[in-house]
Length: 141
Image 1 (cartoon, one colour):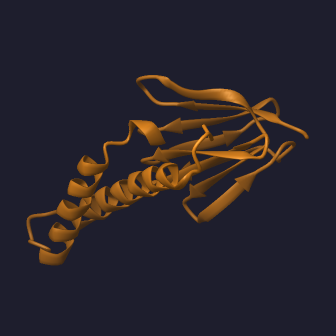
Image 2 (image 1 turned 45 degrees about the vertical axis):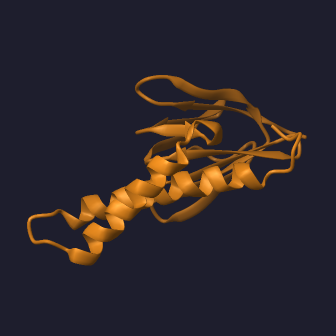
């Protein structure tokens, strides 16, 4: 099966670098899938999960936004922040979700609702990735 090189990078670290069969990410206009030999592309990413497919297995990363670039030799994700499922503190993500929902419900005039909406999207992405890890059968990485 054909593969391509994927690198997921934040300002702090290299999160992922390996050959994969495909990925699914959340672009600004919706979900997009990248397979080997995809046409060159550059797009902004919104908060969501990044699904990495390799050898009939899936791995999930939580992205808080960034950019995706498809090059002839590899795909690069430059993420604002990124966490692997096992790195996510579920209690902290739940608390962030509750804070964002409360802010959006109250909508005080001095609060930037766009920032609260972005915080809600980030926390939902983190919880989604953590949930997928919990549901994964034992023995799968």
